[in-house]
Image (cartoon, rainbow, N blue to C red; front, top):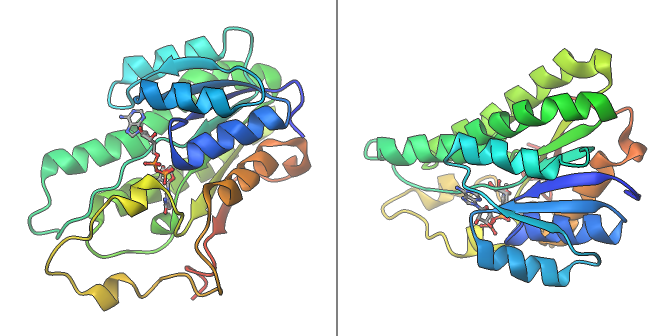
Length: 245
Ligand SMILES: NC(=O)c1ccc[n+]([C@@H]2O[C@H](COP(=O)([O-])OP(=O)(O)OC[C@H]3O[C@@H](n4cnc5c(N)ncnc54)[C@H](O)[C@@H]3O)[C@@H](O)[C@H]2O)c1
């Protein structure tokens, strides 16, 4: 499905990014993998069907994001998958402004930095971008103010870029996963003293509705491929009905 395509996958040291890098290589893509976790990138590389270009980067640092794109685009670039992300919970009265800025930088600002650096290459190849929003980009969720704001930003920038670059054939889409079994969700404790029922009111509805990273990787591969050539500006939920109502 992705034979001969040159792809950049961020967040590839773990979870959804790792599964996507593995899937893209299996589909025939040449992949550059980026993450701040260099050891995790090496582990991912060992799981891929063909050796990737490994480029550690820090989404907190815009110059590092631009350098990542320069490496990934050395021989041209067709696809960018923005998957790096962080989650911080907390009551809004006491949520630290430093944490707020960090979540916005990693989850949203770095996504735009990477896209902006990739644009000249994607315009040449009529390429596409698939970014990672979240159910938290489509609905409000209590006790996760920065995360929700950052994922709504991903939704907004995806739709706006889709409009701005439609006439030159560059597509922009985002995936909105619900509950996915990755270190992010399994290792992040809920904040204390919260209304748990309020927090969980948008849990998956579907029987067995929580996802594995490979379920989400499947959607990345589809949206990035020519099978999705008519899809741009879409925010695709994969959430077992979490945001259905
Ligand atoms: N797991 C879920 O339930 C879920 C739901 C909706 C959306 N998402 C989104 O999916 C994406 C992947 O998350 P995941 O669940 O696979 O989590 P994960 O923690 O397994 O993977 C996130 C990756 O991002 C990397 N990363 C974090 N900060 C970075 C930085 N400053 N620079 C570079 N890389 C950095 C981490 O090292 C890690 O490899 C994120 O954008 C997340 O917000 C996850």
